[in-house]
Amino acid sequence: MRKSKILSLGIVLALLALMVSVSSCVAATTSGTTSSTSSNLSFVYLLIFIVIIFGFMYFFTIRPQRKKQQDTLKMLQALQKGEKIITNAGIYGTIDTVYEDSFLIKTDSGSTMRVAKWQLSVNNRKIPSLTVKLLI
Image (cartoon, rainbow, N blue to C red; front, side, top):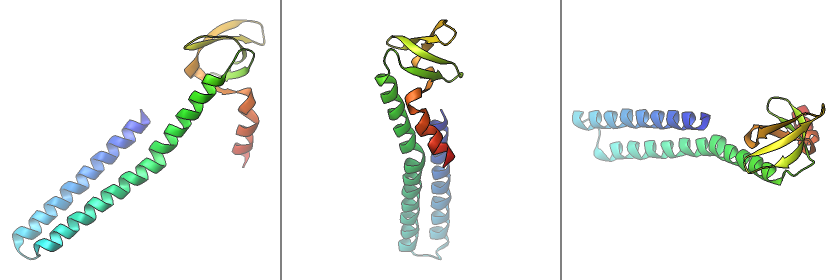
């Protein structure tokens, strides 16, 4: 959802910049003060600027988000029975049964609960690497 908001904001800003540039080019050519080559050149610069903005948006928002989603998906697919996990709600447990879209986990108190796969935040194998990254 956040990615779509950022993308739509970028598109709106790009269209706004394009409209401003086109209106200035039209005003300049109707007044007769500039030649058509300079107005075409300013339009080319605007297009290059828009492409650079979209490139930055891709490399700083879209690409890292896709990489994070792929890493999370790989982690969820690799989880098996007996592995320790932590849910997004902060519940610690051990996987008892793996279903297609959820896990049956057993908590330390002995109770069992069914948790959706998307609700898992990390498994305990990855906790030391996460804390090292946070401390640096």
